[in-house]
Image (tube, rainbow, N blue to C red; front, side, top):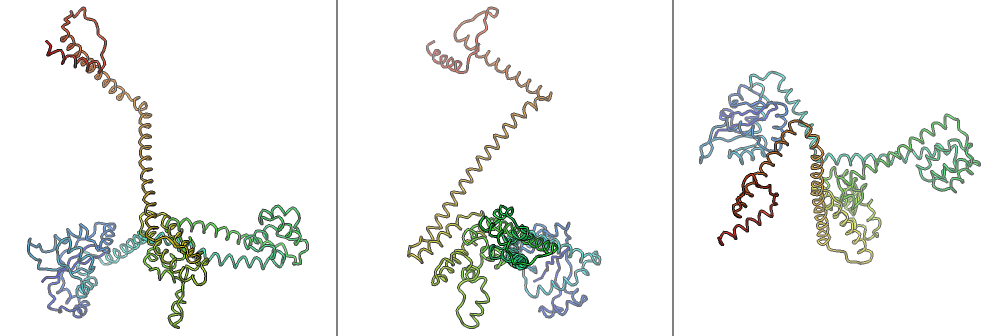
Length: 534
């Protein structure tokens, strides 16, 4: 059986015929040895056809389809033109060697051509790749490298753009930055406390919060200048007038040393920097909450935005978290303790990052492991719904949260919780009702748009009528309609005169009144009744 090789290069599709396999042998080692020698390998493999890509965009599309295991129309036409034709009802006397097994299966399904891909075919294609520039005569030196470089850049850029988990990266970066900001703000605020305590040591005991301490230090500057005038500003920062008065009194009898103006300026600048970092941390937390509600609303409503974001970042993406079983999700973040327990044959950890959830903190000591297992089960369900659902909603997350609350009550008070089937049915019904409401709202919006369009058309009509051609056409149409009406009325009048037998002269005939459509209909019924009597 003859063997043809399909080679997908960066410049186009190439088809080779492997006809002299008996000279080198039909095993992989013989082909591997003959690849480096072109004179020997050229007798085995010969170029049958070559079809270059039309453009760089066409090459990128072909490369994407080949990587996904799909055969394009261009590739199908190329194979049908250059491969030997097979008669109907007969088996082909050749096979096609392909590097990608998925592409080979798709080609065999659509074209009924036998395809094969193994080590032997891969070695032959490797030899073709090494000597490809020598098989094609018109190809200049350096052109193939340029085409490979350009296609590689465009392919990698397209893969980054169409990354399924690209939205998750924002959450992962935000939670990492949030954790580092917490550490930095804590260390910087401690430095502000230690630095400013040389000047005003009594302030540390009065103000415990780091952010408020930095704001107060920025406001006071020099303790010797403290007076009753600073009390309203201090009460605005602290929210307590007694504390503000206490600070003023402590400043008058402070034991701290005096600082030079340059030292005070540096302390104030550093306090301002800590305040800016704290405000940026608040904005970053708000950003993380909004992103989590967009990406994983059910997971965020079940376990919280921060813990959910930590689970996603530790797993790598939302899809990886959805693929994890609940047992893996339960100890996610406690890998060191797990492997240490396996090594020493001790007790394995009961929880990892889930421990930061409020549910486990509320559970009793003996029920913490049970609660962690149950919560991990619900988190895995919520992550899978968020990952694979078409529309994002918090219905399932809220129902799962209710289930966890019921399980807590069951462990504490013994109240039996609802069954999972009933809860999921109610969640599905609520989502379906929401979908129907959305569908009802959409037709109302479309009808409102149509009415707006009609109004706009009526408003635009007088503007369009200002054109001379439009006016003439409308006048001519009106005249025609009037003439048709007159003709119809005259015909009806003539028929009535015949039936009544009133033959009056043309000169003395008076103009009759125009009859309505209802009167005409009644006259016609009268005619039908009078005819049999005559």
